Image (cartoon, rainbow, N blue to C red):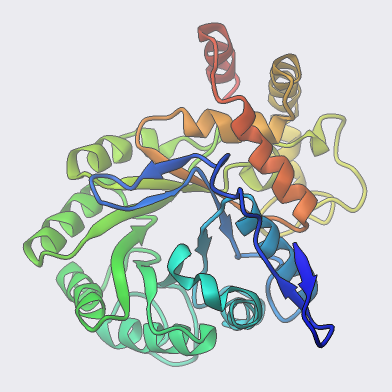
Length: 336
């Protein structure tokens, strides 16, 4: 919603009923609730993108009750630009609502040249959080993740760095992403000994990609840590876009890094069956895929991207029907 002040400047006012329809879930055994659907800024928020469109998406998200916004130091392109653009949006529209937001950033992937701009060293993580805060114009983030395991840095070094970031007041909670079950349990042990609140593991999870079911979800349950799922639509395969083949101009048609034409061709029969199940449920395939994830044990939130407010509204529409029959679950599993 926008209103004009006395000078004619348009001011953003959020939807007053934004918390009435969104579902909020607890992060593991912590005191934190986050929305069942969260907004990821991996794509569509860099300097190559339209800033006003990004601003419209973030406004739409908050109007829908989405309070959790997920970033990383290298989101863009170029690296850092998603955080900088998000900082601009925060300053223009959300300064009065900072305490209603749960903002995440991460570090772990390639960010700047040389030996100190990647992976999991204390030097990299400490520099990364300072840079991220500066780009976003924030005093702290609500959660700071180590984005991926570092095989060469001792896990203790990485976890102690995360703990010190919390103690310095630069993050309230910590998380990890892309860690295997054994690594996750070890990280949890260290953080518990340090008395640092480790509340979320961010993992790739979808109907087509279920690796987290091979031990990770059980580990998170044991450790009292929530799971937030990214890539819930398998880079677009779990949408109605590919039901009738590969349309011209689509991500798969361009054979982009994250979705090859061969990926869609190998899964087309399953996509058609799943789309038919969704149709009988009165949902789009994308909505069913999100709803299915929210029915999995220990999934706290589903992280979605959006190229427009309309797409985000459609994804949030998944919350209208979260229940599944035993027969539907059986058919989905057979085509996963």
